Length: 531
Ligand code: PMP
Ligand code: GLN
Image 1 (cartoon, rainbow, N blue to C red):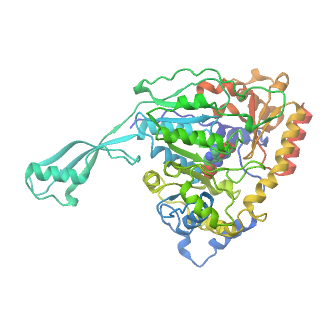
Image 2: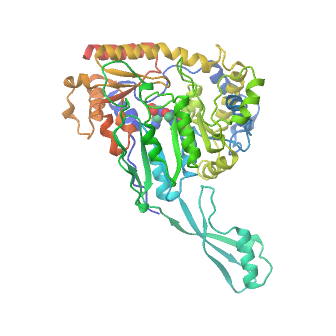
Image 3: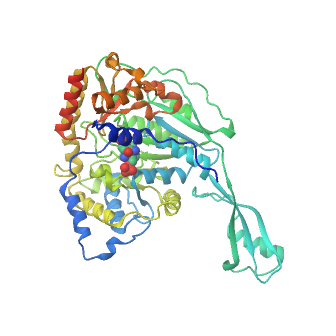
């Protein structure tokens, strides 16, 4: 099997580790809090670690520790107005990364197209490429070796697609029937049936088509074997990644409905939605979600909804979960007084996989635990990938997260709930950063959610020696130069675009504001002094 050569070390790794270690800047690059998580969650882990239940240090159920899947199912059942089965409709993964990986690998197959909305969390594209390149299908030749018989029965090209839940070849039962018919013999016992991997089928590389030139845009990945080429989309009149002198909110970054519609076709397998979005902080509106939902239904497309920042949304914006079952919602909504966030996107439950992260939910990014929920037939496909790549996630961490959810569940939506207090705590930090960025002349996009802020740095371009760095894109050169010479680290926003579109984002840098006030103040001082 050829090595995967389509990836290089990603931008976040380069900036957050290599450059940060070398130059020790004030790090507003990678997204993580530099203040402690809530006491009860670290206490929970302490309790778990000192518990008499020694089994909490051993492997737990592969698809999710029972106590955690139960807690997750309880909370999300309420939030989406539908009873989630913790056994079949929930999977615990190695971070939200794991959930994305299993969802994408579990569904993308040869010839499929995935729609990714730019700017996007950087791993979506390589994951889609990986699925298209290497794992889309495994061809088996099934040999039934019958010890007593002289013949070896071989079913030509017994095809089972790995991980995507489809089985395009004959079932084992059908093979057995064929054997019986051919040899007029009783079926051999399973123990003498041998399945061998005949060859790995590669699907050719996945191309990212460049589409249009508006701010929020789609990258359409398609298999180069299909030769499918998209029409260039007419320039969008929408406000997007365009320079503006006035204040910009992440809500000013909008989807072009025509561009979105034109991205769907009969080959589209899935769309990846990220709300609130990283890096913009855009919280998709109900109308936008309805538009996406209608297209998904029209084209029979799966929606992978990355909602890791679901709790970090600033008033008056509201996080809406696209994977909601409408009919169920009504009855539950009226009977639950605490039902705080309920969305109405009929028909989406059965085609949505929703992804969450304990790292974001409890401010413990290092715990690296995530999950996916959705209908059992879809989650099954994730389970296959998960089982064969991770198998099971850490037990004590899962138990502690379960304890955390058990504490939050009864106070969901109330002021003492961490999911309510965290965005409140972050709001002044968001304002502080937006103010000081404006003050120094950068034009920030004020996020409606999440903890990143994208800003146009080009008004300060004359103060930067862009030629001292060799990178192709100006934002890379800017951020590197800033790290080395000014001591402040951000992330170049073109990292969140496909190769074809990176130039659109060259004027932008992303800063993280889930930091102690004293560090935000330091950032402000660094920039003010430099300017
Ligand atoms: N999705 C988005 C949008 C993210 O920003 C991140 C960053 N952590 C992830 C997924 C991955 O989350 P985790 O750390 O739980 O793997
Ligand atoms: N989600 C975080 C960010 O965007 C961390 C991602 C990562 O480390 N790859 O900064």
